[in-house]
Length: 420
Image 1 (tube, rainbow, N blue to C red):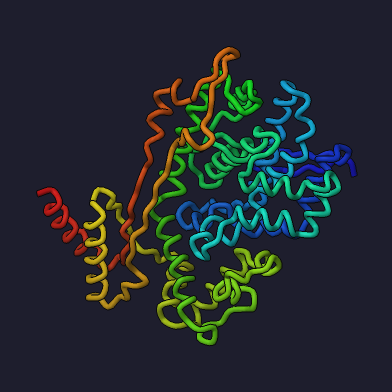
Image 2: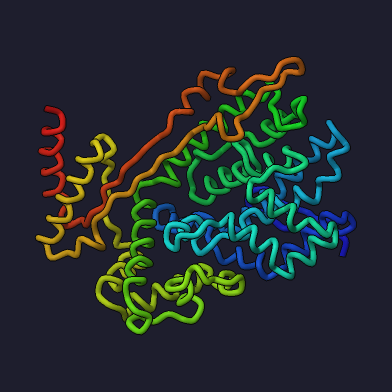
């Protein structure tokens, strides 16, 4: 075998040549059990309940991130051929950046209280299959890749910023891929124009040529729209809240009260004792199977929550960000009283969910414009980017549909009190 091609719905043919050592490494990393597990983890968690086509997985995304990173790196090699020594580090970091995701991707972080970056670095350091392939290139490569994932300083800051920054290969892929799979148009960006505008600043770090300013502005606006319309969509927030409530409720029962296999038992009741094997054994298939079992036989609160999620009988939600914190709590109290009056358990049907999103963060790997003579912060060159610095916030009041009309009437009264 000299070449392997993955036919990707977004990037078309992604061809790997095993005559190139770093690409042979990528082929072998893809074939590891830990990476194949990403086929069983949805990219957008429960978003398919809102956008029915959003069924893509972390496997496809990770491969896409590698593809974009390879394209970008070829451009930088033309500017500075000495960067070739970092090719394996970039390729492996781009491919493995999401290998630690739990079931339903980011949703599992709220469900189980874990951080996928921490588990990504653990897997990269400890997984024998992955270590074997990385150490063929460099005995210390596994630690170097883990440090990139952890956001630590490296010998080449460019590599770190291509993997994780305000304009990284991860974001470039997921915006386009999530837009495509969800059937929306918000995530369409000019990838080739953005890549052509990437350059090296005098300090050797990532910078943008002025000719690419419009494309980067468009990319940042697109990212803002994707968060508002897809990632933080009202029903997606409700679905995530229900999933978090399912695990919270399951944990309230003793292991003898609800069924769970040996793997999920540790995830539920001994999360601090998770070993690598048990962590990697959990994916969407196992977690959703448990929800299905609990939806058939389990204590009433857990049973109803699982049925609600699996059958898409979702709760309703309204944005009450306009209220001050004390009135948000009052609104929650009103919804709980109304739910209880209707014979509905407020503990599993009413809640608040807060969200804050920064369209652009100048102090977190902020982007810079380099015209060959002068280096400037991106927001200083663009009024549009300056406006995106202000965070977008939402506070969702989640409640059962049975109280919808009476709740809205009482919230209107509450609003009148606030405005007096």
